[in-house]
Length: 196
Image (tube, rainbow, N blue to C red):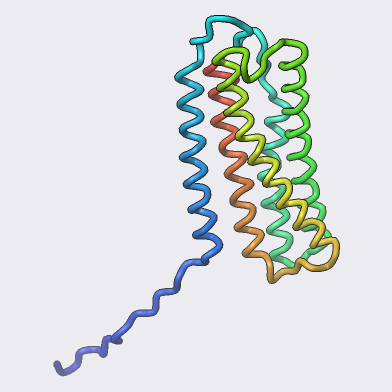
């Protein structure tokens, strides 16, 4: 045809970042696992024949929830600082994220200690105990894994081995932390609001 623009044989299509795709895949798989545990908790709540029961022993950990959800903001601020090559600011926000996550995990440990030794609720006590420790324990495990990853990055950063060129990788790691925080909203609602 006369006057027709030349059409290239191939259209360049950049592949998505492999790390980001892998993290989304991990998050999708973990979300499926959490869904199973949440459904099991909801199915078994109220079916225990003996106590203690949720409304007798559970108290909503509001302060701990604020700490954990605030850590999503602090990790976002850390990655933003790294993107601008503000290393000291990055390290401070990153350390603050770790501290907030550690407070949450320590609070969970204190709650479990109280439930086990003061209230007599163990994983073998009743259906509530089994489903409670399974669901909340699964989340605590994910927080622990996230904290280990964040602590590794902080130690590398303090050793001068993290720079602006690592922003994309740490942004991908922050997706995992945001996922852990989002899952807690579901767990908190199911265990401490609906399940009581």
